[in-house]
Each structure stands twice: as C-alpha cells, then as structure tokens.
Image (cartoon, rainbow, N blue to C red; front, side, top):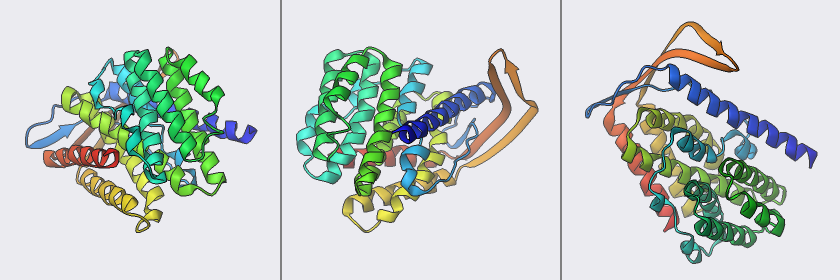
Length: 303
C-alpha cells in the first residue's frame, strides 16, 4: 500500500509539474493568430518520459489536467459535449465498459465545473456501476462512493481524487492479469479528454487552447506505444490504434521552432518563469484533420 501511494505522489508531482510548465511557458511565448491557409502559433516545450508500457497510468498525464486547465483559463464550454450517463445501458461488453469507465471519469470532472449536483451524482453512480461490472468493486467501494459525493462541491479536490482512482484502477487490474482492461480505461479517458479539448477549441479558438492542444502530441505518442501491443487482438483496439496513429501523422507534419531568451529562467517570488519564443507552422488542414479524427474516434467508441 505504501508503495502505491509513493508512486501516486510521484505521479501527482509529474502532473503538477506539467501544468506549471504549460502555464508559465505560455506566458512567455509570442502569440500569432492562425491564418486560414498556413497555421502559425506558439507552443510550449514538453519532454515525454518513456517508461515501460505497463506503467501507462503513470507516464500518461491525468486527463483531468484538461479540466483543470480549462478552469484555470476561465473557460466553461458546452456541457452537452459529455457522453450522457443514460447511455450506460448500451455498454454490455467488458471492452466497452472499460472504455466508458475512463470516459465517464473525465465527464464527471468536466460536468462538475458547472456545479450541477444531480448530474454529478448520476455520473458517480454510472462510474461505480461500470467499475463493478469489470471487477473493480473493491476499488470503487461504498467508501469511495461516499468520498466522491463529499468532494462534488470541491472541484480541484475531486479532479485530483479522480486521477488517483484512475491510477488505483490501473494497478488493481494489472495485478489481477487484466492489462487489456487497464489499458482501455486509460485510453478511454484520454480520448474523451482530447475530444472535449478539441471541441472547446472549435468554439473558443484561443491561442492558449491551441498551445495546450499541440502539447497532446507527446501524450499521444506515449499512448500509442502502450496500446499498439494489442493490435490485431480485437476490432475495437484495431480501430483505436489506427486512428491514433493517423492523428500522430498529422501532428508530425507540423514544424516546431524554439528560440530561448537570456536568461532562460527567472524567478518571480515563488514562481519560476521560462522565457522563450516558440513557433509552430504547417498546413492548417493538418489541424483540421486532427480535430475531425478526435471527434470521429470519440463518437465511435461511445455509440
């Protein structure tokens, strides 16, 4: 148990570091609006840390980061984007239930931005049911249910607790020889998180959101490494993997350029600020393709 919490603390530290770097570097970047034909904008630098695929939940940052970042920007997008909890009856296979557990965990954090107690409670119930159905009853216990209900009015604490549950679920499933389901839970969570981010960008088209969207490239690369071992094991995995790889190809056609200023890092009170000028350019059709693929993939897995 102590080892699990130690790893979770390391995970949280990594998440906090990523959020801090995203926010601080973005402050120092020069902003450029994308043109209809050629895309030029700023992007922050991110360093993926390759770890063994069995640690997928530890080296793929929590999808809840997107919800926290939207809150940080003061953006409250269309709440109808989430997968309705009433759809739970449609998911009857272990693969679809594992995917939807990840999806609903993200949706719970997302819908909670609106402080709708009834909707939040219904998503908590849906998550608990899916967890039991795929053998996670001991992880999503009655105590966990009560804890989720207690935290529904504390947005930040709920987001962190949901991240903890993703990690704990991953550990439990892998310990019990359910690596496929563990991978699907994390994959479903990322797909939903990225979909919500892309749809929000379509409505907001802000430079900050675009920069954050570009950063998902590194997480996507790590996710592909984790799921590709299941290629040709099921039609579900095949579709997901093929689509993720196509997304990655479109990210790869974009050109990243960085120029660091002197000094590169300064300290403002208790905050370290990274100063750089960073630019990304490439065909705007690549971004449009990424947005469309995200929507197609997400809608396919929830149908």
